[in-house]
Amino acid sequence: MIKLFNKSRRKALAESRLGKYLFYAVGEILLVVIGILIALQINTSKQEFNQNKKTNTYLKALNTEIQLNILRLNNRLENIQEDIEATANVFTELNSEKAYQFDETQLKSIMDTRPIYSVILSTSAFEDLINSGTLEYLKNQKLKHSILKIGSHTDFLEINYMDSQDVWDNYQQPYLMKHSAVATNWDSLNGVKIPTTKFTKNKEAFVHNRDYSNILALRMRMQTNYYETCAEIKETLEKNSVAINAYLNE
Image 1 (cartoon, rainbow, N blue to C red):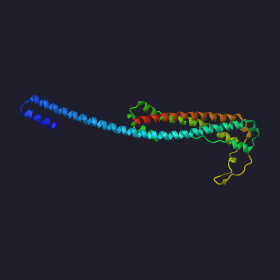
Image 2: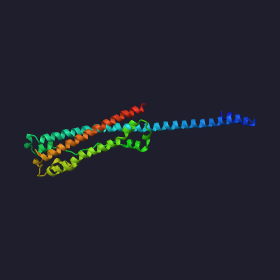
Image 3: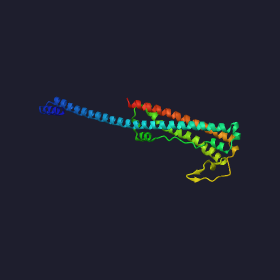
Image 4: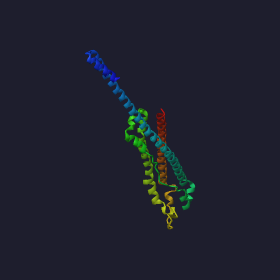
């Protein structure tokens, strides 16, 4: 088409027909401009396609990570609930009427005490998505804002865990070290026999004891807070997963 305009333009110039020459010259320019615009549009569409493909790849990875974290939260929720129930049982037993008659063996059997463990959520896919800048191209603003909040949820989860862990580190464990007979908890460790000791637990420090009862109650309170936070974050992640799937299936 451009060659045709070019040939006609030259013919018009040769015949000294300025009007026709200008007509063909303008037509030739318009064709060039249209060609450039079409090329730009094709290039833009290609870039948009590639960016959408890249965004979807990151979102699929994030969704896989979310599913993994939901499983981890489910396991931690079960463990926290078991811990709350076990602590409540110790609280009840130590404050029962029969507790006055507990001997060393009975005390040892009900003192089911352990550290508090955190749930480690995977964040690599989330961090990759954020650091890549790909999230900026996500057109669904509601989904974008929801994804961005995942980081703050993870931080809040860690804060609640630290509150629970603080009860163990600064209250319960020091109390046990002072009033319990830790050396009597095991007969041997790694094949090494533990020598027999003549000291025992300080029964009065545990049976109907206000200080230790307060520690147990505080542990249950903090663990309940931790449980509620895990449950809320799990629900949030489930909603994110549903939204991501809906976006990917559009």
